[in-house]
Image (tube, rainbow, N blue to C red; front, side, top):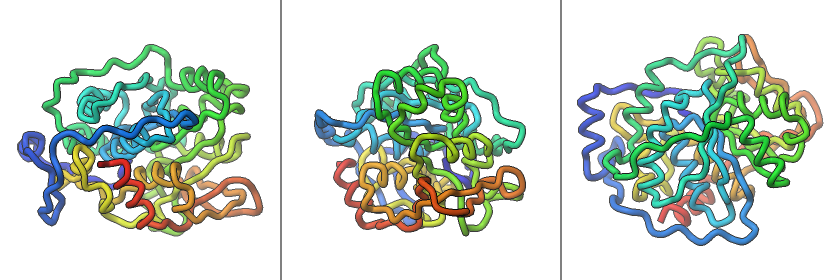
Length: 326
């Protein structure tokens, strides 16, 4: 999820989709064609559910986790409260085809937004769908989500994989639904790593400190207070602009359509710190979250287990990206 995106005219989007190469705002051209084969999965690869709203920067993070040898993505879930709801699954056929990756099960969320949530601006979702930077001329076709609702699928996988991890790049609507509706299964999770919230950064909008929390703030607060370890990557430590290590085939164009660039790639940084925790400095504690006035604003209130990332080693993250996006 990007919190500030600019919609471009459809004619520009069409030209970008047909272009043989993607470029950033400085005109730099990124590699085209297929990516090198991904490294083989290690026998002890960690099972992961990726909860995402399928915005362009989410796709970059998803690609990293799909290709990383120490991660086994066992499902992708899409809440209806994010920037893109399950309309975004229309991108996934081309996405998995471009990565030459067999798709895991994809499940749509059925849990509605809470009364304290603020809907993403509708034009952001439309723009993300049409201006992702993903090649759309692949032959992979549409991907059909499974019939099982997202929260139920996460619960089933938690029962099957003790220590299942959730990497959440969207509002925590469905993750909190597992906590409420399937508490025993939820307690089997190994952890939740979430891109959400802000500590000291400027608010993203009136009443919204950060959009992933602002879109459905109470579920975020529930997960923070829940029985499973949580790591939060707020927007504070993430520099603006795309990282150098993202300049590769397929992923190099994600979120870089002129006029619709992602201002920060903290979805990708969230995935990067998940696979290389040494790239993040964290502060543990109990954290209060504003759920009504400046939704997503975090404040440390005492000692506790929730880890909030306060600094990133961006050079180390670039090495992670380069090693995976070959």
